[in-house]
Image 1: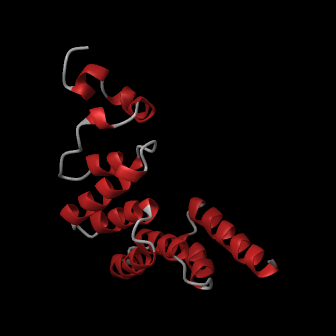
Image 2: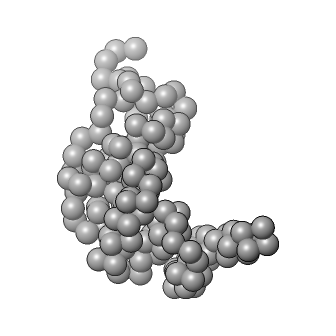
Length: 146
């Protein structure tokens, strides 16, 4: 149990360093942890921020092998693919994540930054739409008169 708490403490410290912009420090902490889908995913995000996209994609692929249905792995893998200019593959990852993260706008917002169209907005919850409201009217989002 103590070992598990130590691992979680290190992951929390790595996340704090990532949020503070210390991507190298976060990567060092994560690289020292046991390989799980979460640690690989977070380490890969650090690699993206450090402009090590090739290494990041390898880590994301290993995370996907470990947790093929994890929407966070799909979302962040999509970010790595988009950074690498692999937009069509990134769009697939964003859509896969969006199907499972129904209350989180992140997959659809990332998809909106790619050269591929987002899905019809009627599929998103009102909570998700509220995140987008400052950018467009409800009429614009739904594509019809309200």
